[in-house]
Image (cartoon, rainbow, N blue to C red; front, top):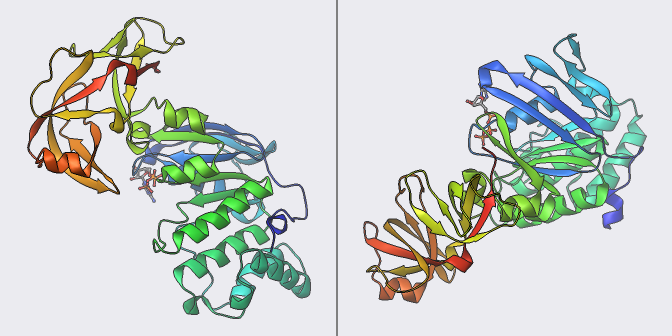
Length: 371
Ligand SMILES: Nc1ncnc2c1ncn2[C@@H]1O[C@H](COP(=O)(O)OP(=O)(O)OP(=O)(O)O)[C@@H](O)[C@H]1O
């Protein structure tokens, strides 16, 4: 098997998507354009509207208003009532659970797409064999889904999705239901599939590493709206929404930019370096990494640092560091600090302890944010 086998298809892969859609009873109003071949990570809290976006694209849900097109072809248009059924869309959804047809063998599951597109039995089986080989599952061809492990079933589901030769691949947390031991292998397979194929893909994930390693672009959905959209690196290193900052594991404090600092709504001053693109007096975010925080039991004096009084709520072991979580501070929110295991032990830190987080101004970046 080579990664080349993942790019084989009967027509050029990749399709450009245009979405403007509202779904009233889900409180969503989504707008998005995706270029052909782009891999977009879709992030957001539970209930934000990520699955709703995928359902709209897959044809499992009709928009109340708006229009969805793929390469200019209308998939759904609420104004005219135009509607393309799911199986004709060239869009395939890969869900958390493999959802294979239980009565069919793995090979027959994979051959299903080509068969329903009108290919003969033998041709469809050839396509299936090729994709089974591509996902390292040739030896599983004759097994029924009940005889497959979760990771094996998900590999078959990936093969089935690709055998249908979709222009757009939708992935709804495809690793979420997998055992931690098998997830890395499936992730690696997806990496090959997404990087090698030139297909357009939307990947719903809660995993920062997936977003970083698989996606060109990150879209963040909050309360049914796209609130952030940009190159993966930019969104994750210069997050503008609290959600992205949290999953990126970055401390983020919103307020108004001043030349040398940010002022929160309650007047807390956070000294930092103002990004040249951030206008003074405009809404901004101050950002610093948990590893930039020094923890003190008493307020430190006489150093050019930010000192924030906080209350520890949780100590989370993370390899050779302990991540400290705090109770929310008014207008600042909860903060994170990473300290060494030795430091956490020396300080005898426990949930409920009041401490000071100290951060050098040079460790704090201040960026503009949307109002
Ligand atoms: N079948 C449904 N019928 C009605 N409302 C729904 C349905 N599914 C989801 N919703 C609602 O629509 C909104 C968006 O949900 P959606 O499932 O798209 O969020 P999500 O971002 O995918 O969340 P999660 O990460 O939990 O999967 C939520 O308010 C949710 O309660």
